[in-house]
Image (tube, rainbow, N blue to C red; front, side):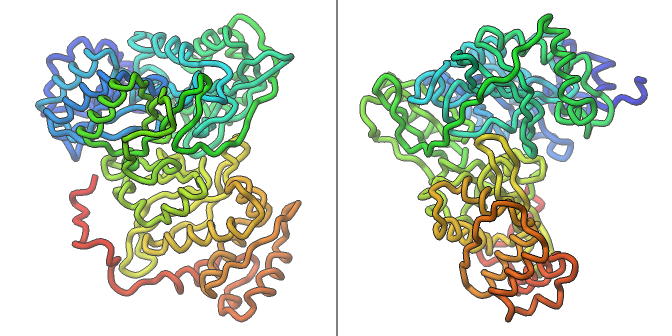
Length: 567
């Protein structure tokens, strides 16, 4: 069987990551082999073989809580070593541009602060997340931070699990009736629920960046969560697939044996049966810059530059928090939350309109083609902010921007389909992300960056013309009963004619014949009809190329990007 194990599992069989760490002091970071790079991920250190001298260090911040003192000390390290710092979409921190000769020293200094880089990458339980207003916001019912820390402490440096899971596990828990961000992209999600008058948690399993977690029909009271977590991790450790790397997530285990079979395995480890699900509690709320807390004080959402931070900025926030006795929390939305203001006002000024936009690491990651954070400039940011529209922008299909769990999702790609313009984005729309009912559907496989504003603006215009006050509800109820191809062609026809003819809500799925009739009613004069056969595919290809083929290069890239320098 060992010959069938995937490459990472073969490394684990030869040497456990915890044993590799015993010789950590002797690692030559300027001469790493493939095995070294594999093992180092388990301690939050990673690079690629084509960037051998440049490293990233990822820091776990369980529940997003970090002291002002540690925040400042991390900024001091950033200054001293001239690093780049960003916030992750799991409420953690990443340090980029770490030179090989400094990796070991920086790793030591970070872990000496009382925070940890351990198991922040690789086949581990990743940073455990909760809502930024956990325990303190007006929607908080159960404070989950003690549970977050119990799970965190159980995993960190546990020799059985360090780097030894079949694949990564993302865990989220919320005791709030309403949350700033969705948790359904997690492998394991404990959602606030109520059964027989008692608050607790319903369990959802099998989510990932591109799929929503499924209801496991399990209700847990607060005291049962930690033991369930332990049983879940042990079950995955023992029974998870270690063969094809592409089929090793909990999602794939559910596909293969079913969620009931997984529950039976968990029950065996838990030593007891579970209650059936309670009523999951979801309240959709628009969170503003200031949020009233249960104690009458306020929380403030400091909007980062799409997760990018400067050391002086961090020090200023840390000093402000110290002077005003505020708590600092890092949100899943890549923003910073200051908890405990006496009034809904502050002298701090946010850096961007980013409160509802999650953007992946972009060119700081080897998988992304574009900077992504810079490419947000192609979006109608003021309109997005005005309507609190959730946007996820990923640099590749892996989906670290959670593009299929937001109102409008984007993947930055490149293409030569439209002449010399090679930068663009795949667009998704229609996710029912607040309740995890469905992931977003594809609207376009590629839109050149310079046309991204017009396409997203049209989606927002359709929303403004509707009777809905929430974009998620609008998109799911209007678009999702029409076929994906019809919605794409409807957008293109409106763009071609410079119109914004809204679609009506349908109570059941439409037929192809009905969609053809609707298009002919509004756009019979357009020349795409010769390309409509048994579907709309060729018509979409024709009209998108007609609209978006560009002579010359994107004028907003000046000077021309040297792609060799992109990571």
